[in-house]
Length: 495
Image (cartoon, rainbow, N blue to C red):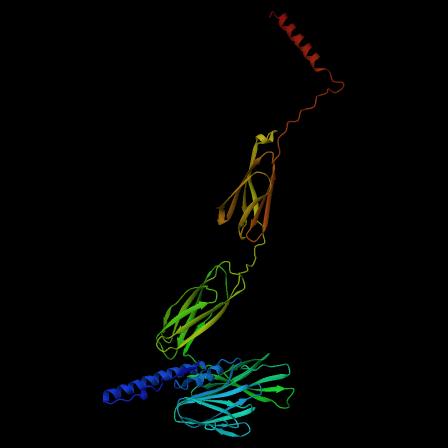
């Protein structure tokens, strides 16, 4: 962000007499200086400029705004000094850069440019061999020529000042073609308001990716500076290049950590614990938690550190219809309302439907308890009934009972049998015209059990006629002779 400040010196221009008025004038001047410093800090943190100009020279400073809105703009070098003393700054310009421009801000500044070839140009030489210098307010805008190599700027000032060098038509890591090989040789963290650098250890991960480890981090604001070499098939030697992050960074005394399973299940409430620690400053910290799907249900709003740390939690609720494989990014932020220090933790979670491991391979068992059948020849006038108990032992439990065969009515109900075994009691009734039934029982993992039964209608079969065997005496003549003998005996005895 670039600021144009037009009233920084307004208080100094007031003329009045009297002690009270002078005191008021000095107070107004101090307030204006504090406001100016605030804008300078904001500009520095964002990678911009705080330019002090008059209203008359304001139109001349519009080139700065045009420069900052140029596409493909990169920062080659930047430095800020809160004290005034002579110092030299060096930066590398490679052949991929165009429109290399240096911005030097400060109330009382003198400087000298030195090109890679050794030529010099002072700040009073507006059109010299090394570039064109434009002075507006407290800003010097230097448009450098296209010499490739190591440039040096020697600055002398008794007041705070800043230096920033930018270019265009490139990116922080350059655009690499098939015939170009890029090698990163150094990465360091550079103090924004000092000359100290913290060098990192570089590890190549392949495909143009590098991992940089730094043992120490500057206490205040800093930027990231990168040095490297460009090798090309069209050149006999490597070309060095340099880039620097545009915005300023600052290490936090706060540490926010959260450990969680990387997966959550749909349809459940998930509690995620986190810890806020600060080994330097205690106090109470405000907490914010949000995600990119709106799954955050609630979270700990504030934490008071005890012995340097405190724990909170975030509750997430994933709807049951959440698609398996959905990625969720959760951010937990802790901020001190007193010191303004803050930090955050980012977690990436995946919504995964839980896969049940099947250990039940036994089908449900059907046991017929009783059958009541009284079916006559006319089947439409009679019915029959069957009762059965279905169990699944130590399995996953009976989920459904249905008819595969039969036109009757099926009723089922659950109960608990001996030993706490779940029993599904089944009652089936049907017309005798539907004498067959086949029941199907399915447990929770799809195992299928079956039982069947049939009844038959009772029938009366007529007996065949009896035919006497040959040679047997007739039955009835024998009975007649016996009857006549009995009557004769009764008559002779006087009956």
